[in-house]
Image (tube, rainbow, N blue to C red):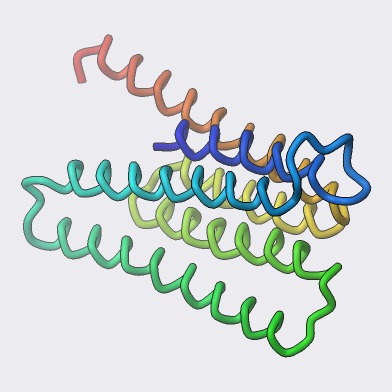
Length: 179
């Protein structure tokens, strides 16, 4: 799942960066890039949902309840963040600040949820990824537009891909030891 999201961030935000004024030569219009990213992220959401449901097969009791509540926390957190951002945009947030609002607030919510998951399941990779996501969310705002998309693509997507590789290596080592 981390690899899918790492690729989505790397490719998606990598496509948005040059499409914004001040970016490299755009090969897609800004609206076409936004649609591409929306479709890419929707595909990642569908994959994540399917993978999450598959992984929860057979869970019962407190483990199942905790997993379900954790999934709901993602839905509630991201829905709340989107509601706030849309309201601010509707109430006159200047257009040049909207990409910074989204690139800062989304990683803030995602980072806190990853950090909570790391604490909940004693998972250092997930917790570390949560802290990293909080850092890159703040860094993306300081990078300005379109630098925010470059930060999210390289540091965000790269961080997710590194976390995925770390999980694979850990699982491979554990399997080779027969645990």
